[in-house]
Image (cartoon, rainbow, N blue to C red):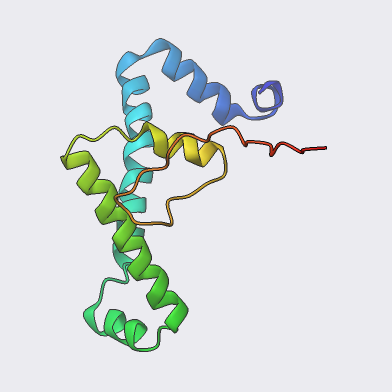
Length: 124
């Protein structure tokens, strides 16, 4: 910042005005927040791809893998939202994720605790 302070008279003026005048400070801060938000909003509106024709064309040209993944994701989301509605305890899901496991079996069958492996006895 010292380079700006030494080289730029505009920067020194801006710092002096914001230090000395609260209305200028709040106006400048408001411009720094409002202007980027307005620009971002209009950019998002211009680049919005929620057109029915485009969406139907993309769905027609979708690969089978994409359709399958969409179906799987919708089923998983439905399962998760159902568990939230039923207020089920889902901590075992997170424990399984930490162990690198996923729920790939029956969606309503919960992962059971891992039991210690038994070693067979060898008779001599």
